[in-house]
Image 1 (cartoon, rainbow, N blue to C red):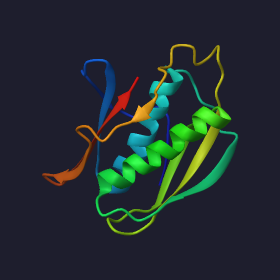
Image 2: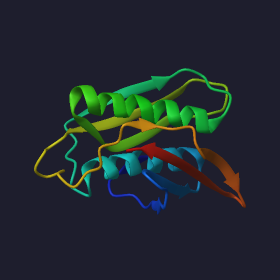
Image 3: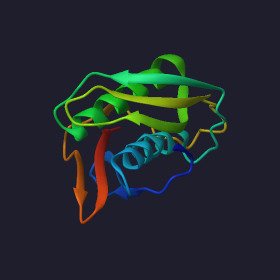
Length: 145
């Protein structure tokens, strides 16, 4: 399933950093919402018009929170080097210990439209979580700003 902005997420109160927490019915939905929460922070709530789709893969990680961090770091790198933001996300493969694959719909960063966006410097390991709780999936990530 393809998820697009906006997606629900909770801002986490964290001193000198920005944090998000998302929830979904599946691990894939939760990861997609985590990707789009990062995009919402970068875009400052501004619309992201998808111009191209690209398949993204990250190496196998033993835990889903490590996979999520690897994907978010790759997307933050793309933002820093290409000035693109994920406006849509479709998770293809996601299992602990296996490579993860997703299709990202990228849109161009617009300095005027996205002026309220945060300057995210890094995706941290601090308090990162990605787990199933009572039949729902939850993920949490803290960004260094």
